[in-house]
Length: 265
Image (cartoon, rainbow, N blue to C red):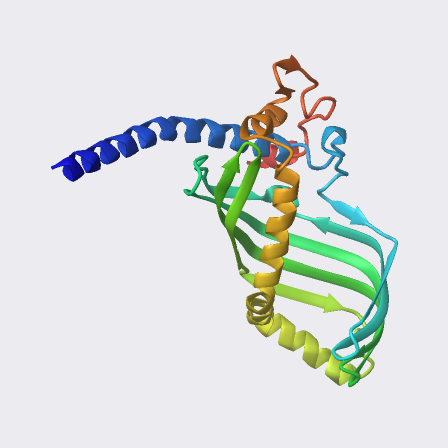
């Protein structure tokens, strides 16, 4: 009898918790979605209060890189006039925030179309078999790219997460790197292979390496979040904190990056 009474009390407490949790979750979700929408409208400008450059288009270069893992890739390369477009077209079809320890939160971010173009060089070899001769224009487009993230709150003050999961989906991939390989016929074959099977190939690469990547991302996220509570994060997003007035996070940045698209619609 006592066990049945305890069970009924537990169920009642759980029901009350969920009743209280639902409005709070909706408030947090609404604040975050509003922030993301305001962010999207300003991504063509630098955002000083976030320490961010203009992100759409994202421009990089000149920059150089070198890789030598002794078995697979040995090359030196560079990029210049790199321009990535389409990041501000992101959508968030799913956002479920559960600010209670042990419950799973989820977020899905989609990018309908992203495209980059750049000048590049790439000298070296692949597995010491294929010689790289890259020098010219490079471009690629990615269609229907989505990232699904789920995690559980490990602690709320300071913030921490656990059980991070990241799932990637890619609709299509097309690339064109001028003069990538020395042998023209092989160069054409590699481009045709990637443009035909790039989605499957990248999926295999992600399946192979995601454990290591997710672990490192979770460590980095917890290192950053450890400075804040959930209320701190919401206060930062809304432009205030600790009961004191502070400059709005988008102060001085006009929300005009999507005006042309809005006019067309």
